[in-house]
Amino acid sequence: MTEGRPKVVVIGCGFGGLEAVRVLSRGPVDITLLDRTNHHLFQPLLYQVATAGLSAPAVSAPIRHVLRREIRRGNLTVLQGEVTGVDVAGRHVIVAGAGPGEPADAIAYDHLIVAAGTTNSYFGHPEWAVHAPGLKTLADAFTIRARMIGAFEQAERSTDPAIRARWLTFVIIGGGPTGVEMAGTMTEIAHHTLRGEFRRIDPKSTRVVLVEGADRILGTFVPELSERAHEQLSRLGAEIRTGCRVTGIDADGVTLQRRDGDTVLTERVEARTVIWAAGVAGVPLGRALAEATGATLDRGGRLVVEPDLALPGHPEIAVVGDLAAALSYGKGEPKPVPGLSPSAKQMGRAAAANLLRRLRGEPTRPFRYVDYGSLATVGRKAAVVDLGVPGLGAVRFAGLGAWLFWLFAHIYFLIGFRNRLSVMLDWAWAYFTHERAARVVAEPARETAPSGS
Image: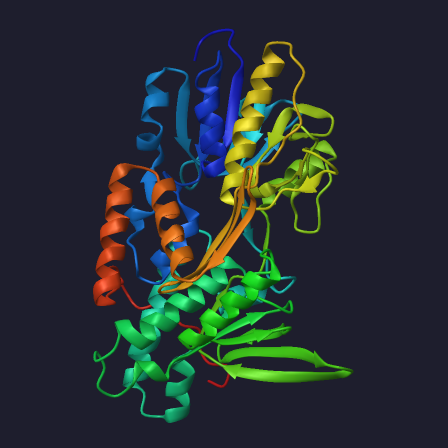
């Protein structure tokens, strides 16, 4: 640390935090980056780790390696630790002790950028989490992978047709990009990857059920692309339930409700593997910040920020990424900023630039989100693309061309040449052989006991 220079603390090394640090490292500030893990995660491809298509190092990289150039500049310190609170009045970030009985650390700041992200939201039913893991971290991906592979092993062991069918049924709750991508990939695994590897079961008899509460999947896309994705996913063999509300999840399956006019219909899907991709909420740190600063939380537990991404009444604290309920101030009325990786990157850069403007005594600028579009893959040779091209407007397409575009876009935005090369090779091998590169699990997943036992 250099005496007299402003101290900036950045919480979280996701897309927003990473971009903020890169901008700030060129300024006259001392930066401390805090993250509970030692790695940056390329979350758009995390589902590929969960479905055994990619290994963990292919979609992640050590923070210290990613930011090695910034560290060499001499004004960045990277620390691994879990932030448990913020002393807003004293301007200190509280970090949990390094081990049992170890005292918490208090790290001083003059300016704070919070990029702590979100967690899974079970809509008031936290008890569902044990039966339906979400997908936010590498640990989540390992859990889902072990459950998925373990389900086929348990089905092979079973001699009871009803129990076997339950093991061979997978329910994915949430029809956004993650849910659609999971459903398409798991269908392909059952129909192609595992073909000929079991003696007692036919993996092609596997049911993959995708549940969505709205009337269509991929609700953030235009209806035409949602319909194309629905058709492509159905063609792969997945069952799609739209307009369905989850009312119960237990060790034996999922209970659904849907309306048919004035009639409420209930459906029970017996399944031993359920994956949650339906809802997210701000991390608890967001609520703690709201209580300490008087900031407002939206329905999803995200912090409502000012146009320049600072908390109201606290210009020294900015919130970026999925934890921020931000608006984009471009032409026309302000529009909500979507919770996507490009928006997190842009917010991180904007918050850092505004911080440096404050230090120079200049006015801050309202955040303007540049929407380059959305992508979602459905399965092999199937995807949908909705792009915003300057000068051309919306460019939308689906099918093989969209799938190839999705592949190259994700390879391009991966961190590091090694990761790009590794993913390219794994995907090429999977395309020609249908094999999944990462099907090894350390130990079987701990299954919850069926409700009847």
